[in-house]
Length: 332
Image (cartoon, rainbow, N blue to C red):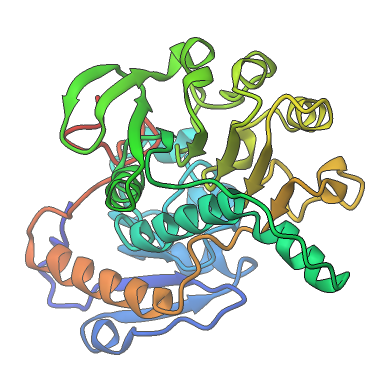
């Protein structure tokens, strides 16, 4: 999908603003008419727009305003996950959708490595001992040789696997389609088989997108099959996990701990049992928020805009039926 208007006018780019100011639109602004709007003004700002830049990627304002998108060719969302965006009207339309593919791969991979180190080295317990002025030496676990299962074999999962392997971990994957001889994972298990395989792993890492197939994929049965010494790490979507079942299995000692960055309801309600569990580390959906991310998002949108305007195919379009960007090795 490219800008094909021959009237000589500039393309119109509507930007749905959010809490953070948009950065890096200077070059695009020299080539296009920029319309900045909040959610209330989106219907009017969509009329005649060729491009929609969803800077406020958590907004639900697009679906009710969709009938006003009379000229839209391309939609770019400044986030990796698109599950909150793909409503039937957009899916069925010819509008090309792109996301922040690749921008968050390394920050999220580093977060996962940090989560593993937090658990393996007992940094939470060490901090508690410091607060209590306790000198309590103990044995910790190694990352080298740890068995890791990464659920989600897209670009984030692959970057994570490469980093963990560099740290000495033994990493497999789980995806929509099982296969062997994968370049980043070696073995990729079918995610439908999780209950039968998770017991062999020290860490189960979730980076999968939220789709009808992955909703609730870490069920009570899967949690019950995990090893008592294992740790669950979720940087994917909160709804991948049955949180009530997770709280029960943690309370019963069925697994050793969890590091959770995303939740079914955000912010995590104060009534959640997960808050009070010492073997759980909770972070506020920040695994991807590295100090470079705003500049990286700006550079990506500028590059994509120049590609689109020149008539070249946009890189890494979202498969709207699948709900994510398929890779050559992701088992589409």
